Image 1: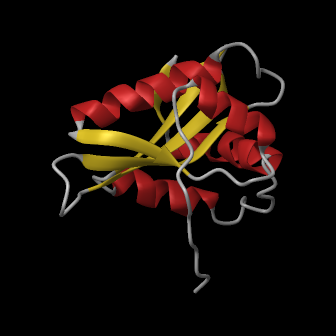
Image 2: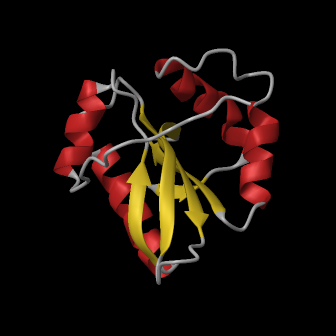
Image 3: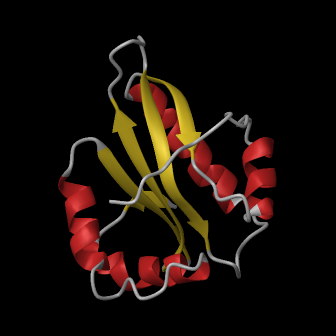
Length: 139
């Protein structure tokens, strides 16, 4: 079942983030989830399987100036490594795409590190195409 995340999901979401290499989020994850849940252009969803969080997706809606439709950005899509291959990622991504359409987005994007080859294949299957460049500056 896909549902909105709750602050009570903090520990399980932190454990999912740890599987992607984002360790030590336990000290601040609760506050970050509270901020996301309070922001009208942010969405944090989880996939609950048999009473536990098996996946999560963080979605951000960005209004556009030069385009008719807005952009939805996935910042994190994580499926628990013990449940991968069961279609959970597909379900939660397709749900996010439907929400993005309802929010007047004409595209959905994701930044996925070059080392995450399995994730690249997943996004290819979901109909994403690679964009040329992505620049980042640490502040």
